[in-house]
Length: 158
Image 1 (cartoon, rainbow, N blue to C red):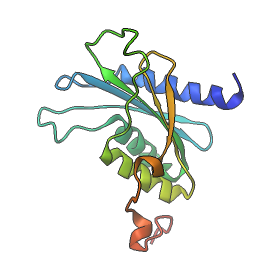
Image 2: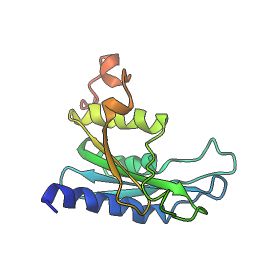
Image 3: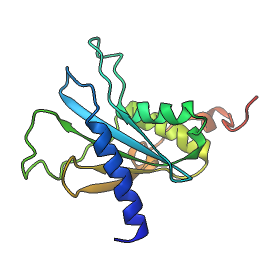
């Protein structure tokens, strides 16, 4: 395994570990996310449901918000996402199934990418199998709308 593959593997494993902390009593679908910052630090998040469902938080949003709370939103380099049903057995047919971020999370990733002014890699991985699919924000959210479209430079503090 080369250094790049090792870095991706560490990020995916952090997302898999975070998935175990998902609070998903309603959907029974647990998701973990891990954000890698440009200095190599990894920040994780897990989905967090609420009985009203509309107030639920996706794992990606939790991880991105945690990075922002540390003042590191512009330092995001990559994110890994792992999710799947809690009750389903991990049979061979499910071993390589990957999920992608929802539309809301894609929009937040677009915001992070525009703030960072560089591409953010998105690694979608299976829960226990070896499947890892790399996506770009642009591929997952074509024709995105963000701060640049409003003529706003999010790097400016004023």
